[in-house]
Length: 64
Image (tube, rainbow, N blue to C red; front, side, top):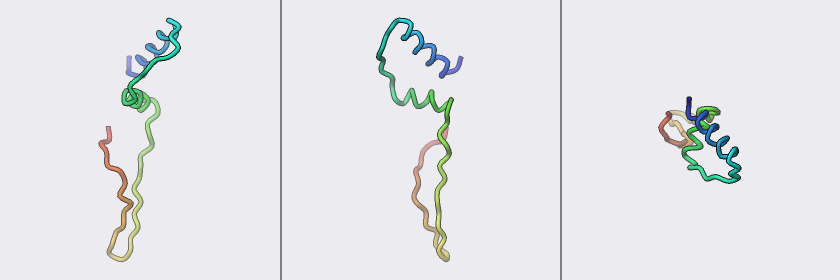
C-alpha cells in the first residue's frame, strides 16, 4: 500500500468515526499529493545579449 492509499484509508476511517475535522502536516500532504499529481517542472528563462547571458535567477531546490 503506497502513502496515498494509506492517507485515503486514514481519512475514510476518520469519516466512519464521524470525525468532521482533522489537522495534517502540510509537508506530509504535499508529499502524498506529489505522488498523485506532481508539480510541473519549472524552466528558467534566459536572454542572450552579445556574449552576456542574462538569467532570471530561478529557484534552487532538490528534485526528488
